[in-house]
Length: 421
Image (tube, rainbow, N blue to C red):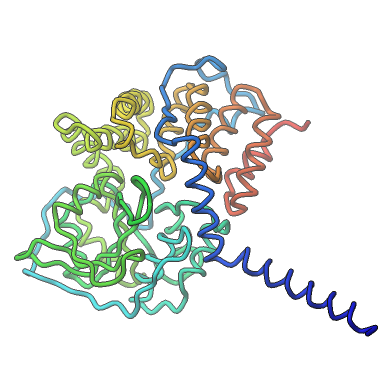
């Protein structure tokens, strides 16, 4: 009889451990997050959170203050289009050889993505083709240690590949279907970043897709989709429509000794600046002819390309028009997650001294999230606050960004540059 209290205690301990394990299990965490998101969005519809540039009552957008030692980090533009090892300018010439009617690459494995793991899963699949033995969780730990992080950028992927593996990765904007086909025909799997409407998920979101082949006769790409599965057929026009949502960005991992071949396949896209000039040209053409959601993304791409070319004044005006187009869309059509995947609007407004717009855009973005976990939004809000001299608020935002992503070295640098309290 005396052993019964101990048995009850051990039983309660085991039950608590089991419940705790279940609570934090990835699948349970996913459904818990999904349930909370649906409740939050029902009470606070995210499509109603609209950023209107220039409408700033808290902080008026003013010119940049004169740089001082304490503010130097917060008033100096930085290069937004990080060049890869391949950056040699070459003239814009067409593919130097005819493309075959069809091509197909057999990847050694397919990986279904875990929670918020689209980018890591696709990069893992593409690297496996070249012999890499890691998986998506290895990529995730090196790019997004917070499982709730919604996005891994092409820059994040490039840093991971070139710092933590023996491989290399090149990424560019303004791609074309022929560029994708050229790499596939030469035996290189290609990742594209695109818009996506997922089953059982409301609204538009960003998504990576690993292309493994194409067929000219049927006008389709074959793809490994980390959400839908392998063996996906994607029509040329369908891919183009959703690829536009990310300014036609494509990524190619490769072996270092094959860099010469990659350079030849890139052609004019080998030069970073040429690629963004090409993206800008196409975005302007599309923005002038498209309306609705497609027109919004085309106009957004104008600002995105201009920012990467460091033409900030023009970029800020282009984003003003893009956000006006967004506000004019029917509520049910608004791609309200768009700022989960982009930083260039923050950069354009920041480097034109429109700090109030930076802060308001970050506030609007975070308010439309059931889990406000975008370290980039906190970082840029902190940068604007620091430029305005509100160092206490900036310190909190940089610290929040670092709690969400300890790998965000620029947030640590900005925090270290703040005057002491």
